Structures are given as structure tokens and as C-alpha cells.
Length: 288
Ligand SMILES: [Zn+2]
Image (cartoon, rainbow, N blue to C red; front, side, top):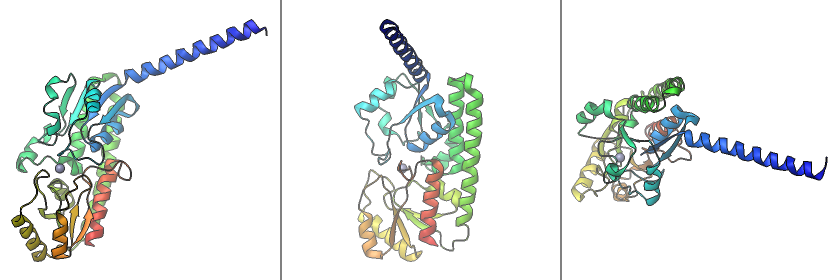
């Protein structure tokens, strides 16, 4: 082969290379761009949307939605998405001021559950009940189908598998807690009433019901009295909310402290089933 032919061959290979890269970036950009506010919804979008969807989570593991402030990077990311899935009912105060300036559609995944929220005085932590979480995931699925109807069958099938896996795992985990003699617990903030309802746990109180307000000395004394009266063995802290207020309770009552996680840490607790499994096992180990 002459030098000239080799040179042409190299050019052709390079040209084809750019063609293929071009194709790949085109597929990337044709993906549905989605944002979610909290980590459990990230798992839902990933599981239902798979490779068809590009998703980012606003409140990264380690942060709490109650205390979150949007970063300039968040604002830039939000400019590029077609849809934002939010839990709503007061969980995402950080979105309020920017929502009107965004072109993305904002979908309240808890819409079918608004009566449930009303019955619980507006408590937004619906996703911690697996039955409610699959309803929220169905809203996500329906929205993906609406925005990308060509792939309806994929979204439907993925959703059915996801739902089945979650409900099976949840039923199995609930069985684990059935025979515990003492199910009284005290949680850190008011995140677990829907979880408790599903798994048959009795939450006597929360140390800091509103994560933006420290409890008063009177409230602390009330909690200590509950611990003594109901023979409570454990109080729970949470990784996203760092107040040390529980320490004085521990000093006074010698109760155990363990950590419940309402959101997932992205390392050991990645999927929704990881999340409920972690919390059920933590409670089981504390109360058995
Ligand atoms: Zn919360």
C-alpha cells in the first residue's frame, strides 16, 4: 500500500470515528432529561426509565430537603430538564422561589395521595410507606409515558417489575417485625408515621418534630417521661439532620441511640428496597 493510500485510509477511519461519536452524542441528547427532588425518586426514575432517561437528584444523599438551599449548579441543571418530580406538601420549600421561572414541568408525585396527607396533618413523608411509594412511582411512570409515548411498553413493563419487587420485599420485611413484643420507638424528626403504619411500629414521639426548630426543655422532659413510662429501649437519630439534642436525653435515660435513614446514603443504601430493608433491620435489631 502506498503512503498516500495509508494516509487516505487514516483519514477515512478518523472520519468514521467522528460520525460514530456524533451518533452517540445525538442519542445522549435525545434522552428524556429529568430531575427529582429526593433520592428515593431517583431510584424510581432509574428503574422505570432505564437508559431512556437522564436523571439527576437535587438533594444529594447527606442533605435534608427541609434545610436544603439550591446551588447555582442546581439552577443550571434545572434549566435543561423537561420535568421535575417533587413530593410536594411542604417538603421542597427550596423550590418555591424558582418554580415560576423554570420551563420544566413540575409534577407532584403525591397528587393521588392528598387525602392521606390531609389525614396526617400535612405530613409529607409518604414515600416511606411502600404502598404509597409505588403509587408515587406510578405517577412517574405515567408522566414518562406521556412525554415519550414511543417507549410506553418499556416504561410499563419496568414499572410492573419495580412495583412487584418492592411490594414483595416490603411484605417479607413486615413479617419480620410481627412478633416483636415491644414496638415503641422515638424517632428524630416526624418522618416515619407512614412507615410505622405499614410496618406496625408505634411512634410515641419525635425529638425534633420540625427539623427547623429545636425542642423546648419542656418537650425534652415530656420525651424522657415517655421513655420511662413505655420502657422505650431506643431513640433514633438521622444522618441528614445533625442536631445533637438527643444527647441530653441519652444522658438522662440511658436509652440506646441508633440511626434511621428516611432518604438513603447513596453508598450502602442505594435503592428503595435497600432503604426500607435498612430501616426495618435497624428497628428489629434495636427491639428484638
Ligand atoms: Zn422530613
